[in-house]
Image 1: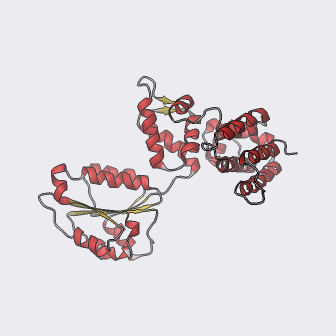
Image 2: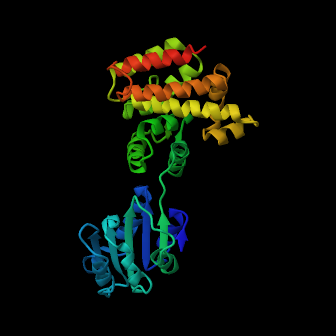
Image 3: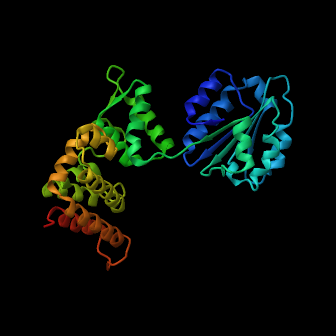
Length: 338
């Protein structure tokens, strides 16, 4: 079967409903590891693992070596568990079709195929879907991460301020392993009587400034608050390692792209804007303010400016101006665009 989400697979595993083959593919390793680790830790008890759990690595092995191991019978256990890690390194992995078409019923074969997917036209893919589980783990898009963080924390009984999820996304990116690691650290530090992650909490325990960050810079530019924007850029200049200019320009590009989308919307109701821009409804007002300050013509010109300055920060079309100066120049031009 083709599983659409990891929760279906984990629920079956918890209910001891096992398939002979699990092919875990895709460019988001978090869910691949979540499923694979569960099978590795929970299917067999500790006394059974010594003889019945085999971990293999894709670098240097062939499909036929995997088949040879998978065909074995378990010893004093109901299942033999074979986990193949880094399977994306295996040459001619499609040769595993020979086994997958007729798998050993007592074996649970788990294939971790990270950062790649199978060609769905092949016999191998069709065999996996027919006899086992094919799961594709896709990396989240930037705008999906705040909601993912909120949902992750909700399951653990923790709330978060809207700005907090957005700030964490900006700082941590879309790497779910990294995000979960930082969230777990934050959860440990929360008081039990008030499990809420705030901006101040993030600033204290992760080190992101709640007043001087890319979101605050966006807001200052959207409000045409040149003084506040200058203060933030000054802070960035003093902390260049934590505030790379290229990341700031990418953040501004995303911001003004959303404003352009806003201008193109016919239905500008709060919920529709939030859905179209991929933002929390809490932030719709911020984009309404920015759109009032920058009409569509200006937004198009600003996006062009961002492209030019992105190239300049990378050494194209510039004679070596310090990056902080380029950012100052860029923001000045945006705010004072005629």
